[in-house]
Amino acid sequence: MSSSKNTCQAVLKPDGSKNMTNKSAGVKKALKNLIKRCLQSDTATNQKLDSSNTELNNLILTDFTTLPLAIQQSGVISIVEFAGTKFKVFATSGQQYLNYISNGIVKKLLNYLPSLERIIICEEKYAFTPNDFKANTRQKRKKKEKVTISHLKEDQEIVSSENFSKQAVVGTMAGKILISRYLATQMQHLKIKADLEINVDSEAYTSKCNCQKEHDESCSRYTVPVRVMYNKQTGYVKEGFIDEVKQRKGEAEMAQADWLLDADIRKSLGNGKCVVNYVTSADIDTVVIHILAVSQF
Image 1: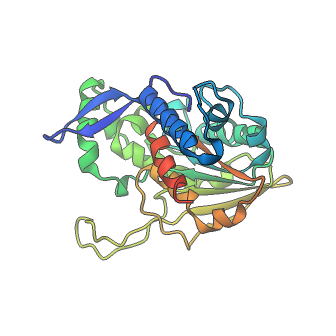
Image 2 (image 1 turned 180 degrees about the vertical axis):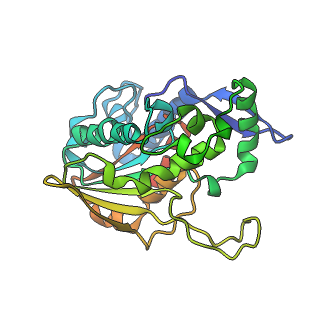
């Protein structure tokens, strides 16, 4: 956990609106207190602990600049929440966007985790996101945004191999949907030479359903992730679908936690191996979601 100023959404008020609250520091404090109480109640470690206790500090690392050596050596899988990438990239073409992913995310993870075998990228899935919970947030953002004509751009003007409109992919729904689907269809263009498997969990490939007009809770749609293989000699080797995974999690951080419970991942882990979750948006909500997911083990 590294964010101390992140601002995120609070619980809904009776009228359906939401307050803005700085809760990153609060989540950190609550998590530390919870683990501290668990350690104190454990008969094997029934001792008085304070915030400086070595055991407590080994369980939660905050504001660190480099990964601990034990994690570097044991990290074989990395699950990446990808929602924040479009905000950080500076690109004028789709190819530059892909270069940023190759160098700024994939190669960086390989440098941090030399034993890395698999990366799972979780994109936002806007067709599966409950708009009722997002509407108030979007309305607040619109009041602060400058008037633009980004929403009038054609798809090829927003994102293609030659074009990339950051204003459109960040500020319009059409742009957000396009960029969330773009990577999964362009994996052969990533410049990666490593023995690595990359999965992209996005809404680029979605099953059909029997809905006549609007999709509702009974809709049977799901998305299918893409599996792409690379090697040190040629880079891109092949790709295919992970048909056994039928994903319906709209929020990227929810999908990220969902992968922790995947049977294939759990089989591949053992003593001396770990999963490293990487959150590009630094959203503190993902910490709470992951605590719930890990508690299922």
